[in-house]
Image 1 (cartoon, rainbow, N blue to C red):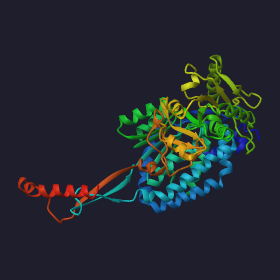
Image 2: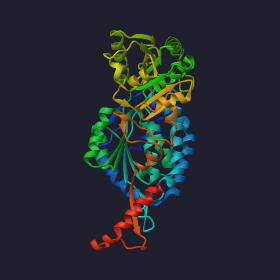
Image 3: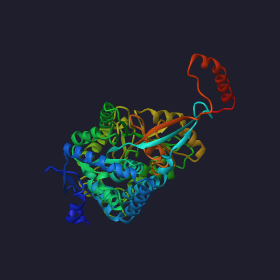
Image 4: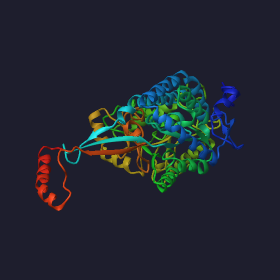
Length: 520
């Protein structure tokens, strides 16, 4: 199938049904390009700041009923959405491939993640957000409970590279908590996200609870930040920093998943052949257009030659294709801008002395944005790809003398999103994992172990972001905590100087006893 137009893929009527979900009153459109062909895919309507304000107002009104429906009702709706995602996966896979250029296997990772997230929060939200007892200031005399109320409107700004998975990781916990969501989607992943939203609406999520808009980030994106009670953003560090500052100016919270220059450590006790095969996927899944993909490999000198040779052989054997099936290992870059960035980084490195061990060339014979997955050695500090995120299929392989050398090099970056350790000893790898400055560390895997662990928090250190998604942490960001304490009437607390004088000794004794008993 040649996915040059939406009509050739899903039909113009189906496209119109999806696009009709957008909140848009303008006549403005943006041309979306099909990565596999470089030809126009469709014209996408663009929303305005007024559309954002109107959508936010209606979402706030609808949120009250959604919240009052209760956890059990929301659980049933979300579990139906889980089933619909799986039932409709073939269309979702087609849309993801056509809009992003990724392979079907890597598109499937998105569907799997979205369904996992939906099931997880459907069944765990009530437990995590249940009212809980906490230790009172003076046991027996007082009792304390903490309850949670959902923030009314959550703003979500999603990227083009993993629109369904990254969208679900923010939107689903917000819905499960009882919040409404206002989402600004990227033009390039719009149809994928609209088809996903449709599944949730068909499952029972009120359409007004989740309005969706498209348009320029500096207009529509900013308006979403200004309208929300909390903002979730996934994207570049420079843009995310601006979003965080704008949110702070309104005294609202933000979770920001930003850039990474993710390292992979291949220890001296690793199997170099197995490590090389696994590292290739870690580097080139979705053509490296993934925030947690690997861009730096540090391999112990004792196995560096064998590892590099096996890595290069595996890269050269990859099947690169635009097929809408599972026959391909890697696909295309998503845009001309992505291609130009990758080419610039490789050309700069080669000009300054780096060696290409695999790839290093565009593949116009396959399509306009195809580029061969590339491994480099001899990358040094003056090269653009040394410290700056490429966000493409380029990885630097560097020999190290020891574990300490590898750790120091891995941590020598402004980023701290994801890291990986390959070793023949899990215990050895775990010891080193605690020394890495990264929000996620994978052992004998590139990123999927942590990415798929939806019960565990995910996020970055340093300039890789702020806050956490997934796990209990991923839903607690969308609620306000409320502490309710009471006096149990057993003993009157002191109110005057004379009463304090009479009770001070007793209260000091209480503190001493609590310490001896190791009570909090």
